[in-house]
Amino acid sequence: MAGQLVILAGGKGTRLAERLHGLPKPLVDVAGVPLLERQILHAKGCGFDSVVLLVNHRAEIIEDFCRARADFGLNVCLIDDGEPKGTAGAVLAALPVLQDDFLVMYGDTLLNIDLGRFQAFHQARPDAAACLLVHPNDHPQDSDLVEVDASGVITGIHPYPHPAGADLANLVNAALYWVRKDALLPWVEAHTPLDFAKDLFPLMIEAGQKLYGYATPEYIKDIGTPKRLDRAVADLASGRMSRSNLRSPQAAVFLDRDGVINKECGFLRSKEQFELLPGAAESIRRFNQAGLLVVVVTNQPVIARGECSEAELTDIHRRMETLLGAKGAYVDRIYFCPHHPDAGFAGERPELKGPCACRKPEIGMLLAGQKELNIDFAQSWMVGDRTGDILAAKRAGVRSILVETGAAGLDGKHEVSPDYRAKDIGQACEIILGARS
Ligand SMILES: [Zn+2]
Image (cartoon, rainbow, N blue to C red; front, side, top):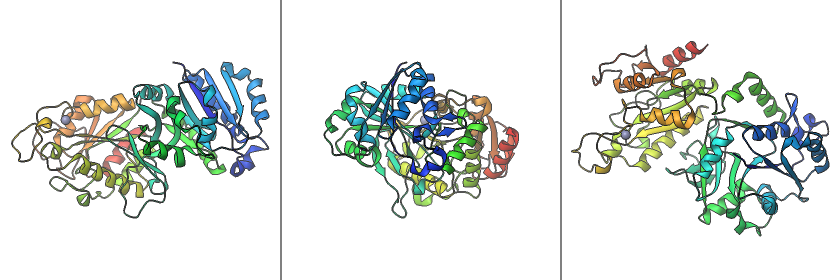
């Protein structure tokens, strides 16, 4: 693949001054290598052949830096755009030299992302004005959150602070965008300064342009303060950053929902009924911190039976993410099966009736995780309270833990025994983390 990377390399880096020793912010040292060099070499390793640097502060130092490294063997173009125009304003001013599609990266982010996978996502959506990299974090309550619909289209951006009692999906704009040049042409006359997240994206959504969210658990962090920089250097040293790249096979914990994460209450139909089980948030946070992907896989036949709509299910999941987020925990993906094999319920939806490949003990939801997140089943686990969960794990070659909460494995549907038994998700967490250490 080929591609063009646009780096927003302006900014004075006032907050990082003590680490800059007089250098411009993009050249800040990150464990012996300047950040800009890390960004360019990472993109080069992902196949990019063109780099555009948008600079408005001490451009000559950045230019000398690149020339001294023979432009890293790439086509590097530096544009000094004078007055700060804001992130979107700077890109709009540079449009004449930009390709039909380009990747916008901020000059203060350290990342290790499979950019080719992200590019393929963008290319597969010809109606996208832009695709924004989004991810969950452990403090959604004080983050700007994006809202996406079932097809991945961003329907709103919710800036912090959020209204009290709001249930929002835990998806944060990570400031890495694939942008289609055509889609920006209508905005070249817009007033600057113009910021992507605060100004232009909301305007584009309002104008009916389609922005997609590309959710990934890969590593991307803003290192604009000494504290953040130190944390990122530690992640680099521990290997956490490189392991998160989706080109590496990932270890995951698949979690059933009802009876494992939250209290089983017959069939959960509204968010008011959703209650986390003791230890659930703490366990999920520990999985997050250990670098294990957390993937919820839940059978929701209530959808097929017409007892709960997709919108109500979305609300339930937002409530779950909000409750987890308040305790510093997050899930990386939620898969649900809306089908049900048996007909005969009043108000049911015939199109969702019948056999499917996703309802556990089928393994369609696990396969989706394998495909989208490069999950390695041999390194992964399933925690469930029903025999269907355990049978799905066996079929996929994932180690299984049956918990005594919820149905406690007494549903009698399948003749199967788990690899481990645990009192609850907390004990399951001990088993999983114990096996990894
Ligand atoms: Zn299904």
